[in-house]
Image 1 (cartoon, one colour):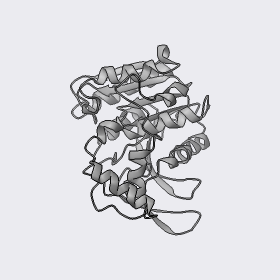
Image 2 (cartoon, rainbow, N blue to C red; image 1 turned 45 degrees about the vertical axis):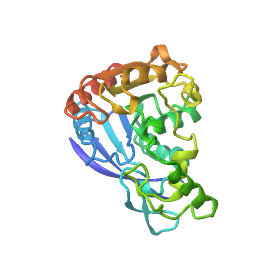
Image 3 (cartoon, rainbow, N blue to C red; image 1 turned 120 degrees about the vertical axis):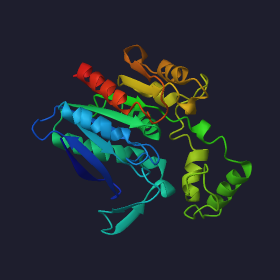
Image 4 (cartoon, one colour; image 1 turned 30 degrees about the horizontal axis):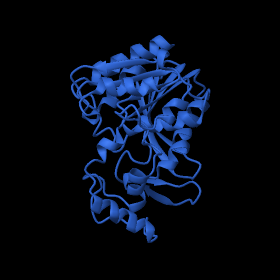
Amino acid sequence: MSAYRLDVPTRRGSVLNGVLFRNDDVKAKTALIAITGIHGNFYSNPFYYNIGETLSGAGIDFIYAQTNDAFNRIETFNTITGKPEVIGSYNEYFSYTDEDIDAYLDFAEHEGYSSVVLAGHSLGANKVIYYLSRHHGTERASRFLLMSPANLEWLMKGVTEREKAIVRSYVGKGKGGDMLPFVFLGWIPCIADTANEWLFTDTLNNVHVEKDKDFSQAESITHTGAMLIGTYDNFTYGDPAGFLENINSHMKTAKDNRLIFIQGTGHTYQKKEQETADIILELLRGWE
């Protein structure tokens, strides 16, 4: 098995960095593209190594797909301006989701896979929901795999009214590109525009514990696939199974989707990394 760095250009010119895991002795028919969550890099989420090595060992290519927010700051390059560029969770715009995912799907299409499973972990799963809700029936993705979708309202419950007012003030005064004087969510130093995306847009706020919230994006998806979560995932107010079941109940393809619960682990599958990878391999083999 080998791992290769990928540099995929987006339509706005920003180059995203990913990693391709593949077996050089086998021409893979299937690829799994995994869109990372915020700060969802190899250092914070080592389960990606298990998935990459397990799938490539079985002749399935794995694409670890960083978008803008895998790290707080990422030094990259812009193909339009021809200049170095810094992107990251500090200056992310959720509206980039379509073109970020398209960049990896463009690579997969060039490789000629017969089947591409579009996966996402944490906020990456929310991005996949957003993307598929806007690209009905796209053949560039065969199925989806949503891993521990992020409940944004749970994440933002600690944001104070004072902090919200500061964000509104910065954006209202045309200072959206300025860094905030506090760390957003307690762990994301970011510009006001990025915090505004989190707080006051519904772009990625598309999964909920409550049954009566806005599930319009999930309701628009026509692909089938699977959802996976750890039974200790603390983004779900103590009910990971109910969380996934609620999301699935709003999908047109609910009866054809598979829900998978990894026992005794949380949001990043700690101590169950290999079990998670083996389950994903079994799932993909069944779909093949």
